[in-house]
Image (cartoon, rainbow over all chains, first blue to last red; front, top):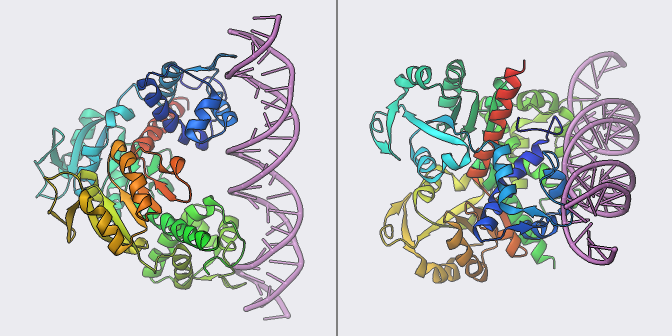
Length: 219
Length: 219
DNA sequence: TAGATTGTTAATCGATTAACAATC
DNA sequence: TAGATTGTTAATCGATTAACAATC
């Protein structure tokens, strides 16, 4: 039972956990064994209050008068995030983006185990990406039946995602890392979706870039 | 003057603007010319109230009793985001991720104009990515002096980002699309940073995936 | 005009920060 | 013990939702 205190932990807290995990891993590897919420807050540019509040959603991991044990806390957060039990995940799409994701991202350090890569492009079928032969979409159903992945990483265009989503869900997929512009969460219930829309992020940067120039020129 | 009403628009609102823009573009292309906040809310899975509240940070773009003109509103939001004036941007890193970003992302539809790609790996120098010859880091300073980019897309590991950041800022870069784990915003002032940490997103998905299974098995 | 829907103010909700007693 | 720092409650702040008068 990973969640031992409050029943519902807010999305904002959950979104901060990976960053805590990252900083604590780094600290641990630099040989830091003990840290206070105040020190960590300084490093991460947060308030000590927020850190203590966040952690206490899951339990009391510190010691009064002392602080937190860095590696123990890192492990606790890793366990809350479910990073130890590697969940099988398939990737759909082996184009430019798909290749980069499969090569660049460490699924295994994020709680998943990449077990297959699929594409529709004959050109790509059979190629090797990180030790995985790219398989044809035709094999998807049988593969899902056999290996029971519950998660998928979608590196395909919106139309393909829209077409494929109902099948994936029928075949047991329940959680998605979604790079497509198809809004899965709006169309299906009881699915977990994380969208990565780099174009949207760039547009936000466009706004803040302009706002920054405005600000600087008014000073 | 893009911001004509309130002085400070919250980050939450700004983060929603690209999604509005995307949906309105799609609607416009599907031939929809008029929409009410209620209808748009339904499609986007938001509340009508939030949409009206968000838009009114920037001005009154609708018409009482009628609703909003889809393409006009799309253009207004595009203009707020600064998508028309293409800001020169350079990309640092032409590895797997860099290649995918440069190929996959349309900078020009997000307010930027990619003017150069750089890497340190001799192996990659001179290669062509989307019509850009990959240049060596050595050329960075002169290139910045000549073309005056203010923005950079960092597709390099943390150590490289940490080493390079002070130089980039010295050479005039003020805004970053940051794929590295180096926390630029913590170390420099008056810079605009958007971080893309796909590993963090995956870890969040790991949590929600487990939470979902728990939920489903308790029903 | 009557109906619809905005722009905007007020009420609610949730998240962050501050404060402090508990305790190592 | 005295000092430090947590866990936790209370206060503040901001964001979302509801309500409604203005108006097309």
